[in-house]
Length: 184
Image 1 (cartoon, rainbow, N blue to C red):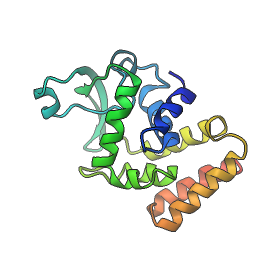
Image 2 (cartoon, helix red, strand yellow; image 1 turned 90 degrees about the vertical axis):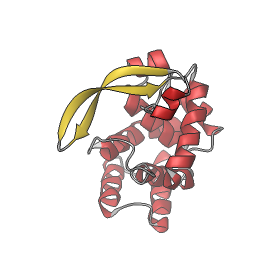
Image 3 (tube, helix red, strand yellow; image 1 turned 180 degrees about the vertical axis):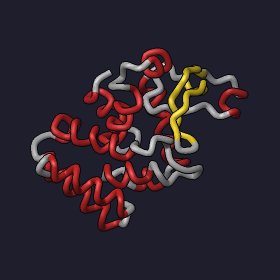
Image 4 (cartoon, rainbow, N blue to C red; image 1 turned 90 degrees about the horizontal axis):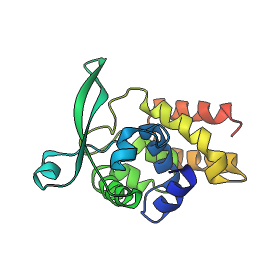
């Protein structure tokens, strides 16, 4: 998998394709993790008990989790998919149902990232540095995926997120600093 291919596939799903690529690259180590290679799970989507009871495919792997102020490792059960397209269909459904702020921010990546902290059952990831890591991915992939004028597109998306009040104060500062560092 590469960023451009996933971007193209995600565009048809109603999610923010740019943010989806950033999140997937982060979650899978640029699509080199066992979770991606063996299970085509591009975002670390865990399998709830209902998924397992329904006999849907799963993939078990030891994962790092941040809990109680420290990092631990534990076996986790993740959803498994037959293809990138299968992953994206389920991912889009999960974003729509469980991360409505991300779904509503499908037109701007900062709001989409912020929405991952406002899910029905909490934040997407346990990693306290997750937002900053997503920003690093955004800066990395912007020239490739947003094309000529990418700095302006990034600023415009940030302005839209600010106008809508999508970002917490700490997120505003982090996005502003990330954009400043790349001259956007």
